Amino acid sequence: MKTLISEEQIRQRVKELGAEISEAYRGIPFTCVVILKGSIIFGADLVRSIDSDQLEFDFVRLSSYCGKKSTGNVQMLMGELAKYEGKHLLLVEDVVDTGTTLTFFMEKLREVHPASVKICSLLEKKMINQGKVKIDFLGFDIPNEFIVGYGLDYNEKMRNIPCIKILDK
Image (cartoon, rainbow, N blue to C red; front, side, top):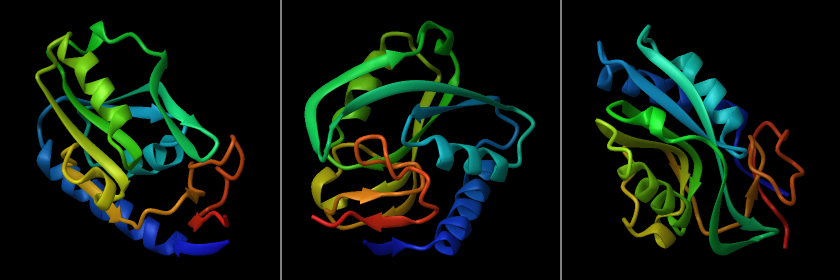
């Protein structure tokens, strides 16, 4: 497997994202909603880099992948959304490609009327997303490759790789 983004590059960019988010939410209570499972490592590192005593931390589990392919159907496996009514939310995602998962989740969130919703994604495949999902805080734009590591998996394996690698075909 070829390394696409090194540990050091990730560490540096997460620190920069934390500073951007700290500034954007200065003095504003907000909730980081980490989308499981893929975003768990990124989310944990990100919240530690945010300078705010107004931060709440929560999780929701969504899934649309089976193996290397998106099924096109999103399942919300855990999470109660009513608690987000009137709150400022920062959704923390690992990778945005087709936008299917976030589009589904955003539609569900609109039903409970949060005060605001912003998206922080470690990775975006811009050539696939093509602006369908607006990312407010982005780590890296990557090519259309299947990637693993830093929380991203292939059939629940390889999440523990500390960098982002391109999975061999």
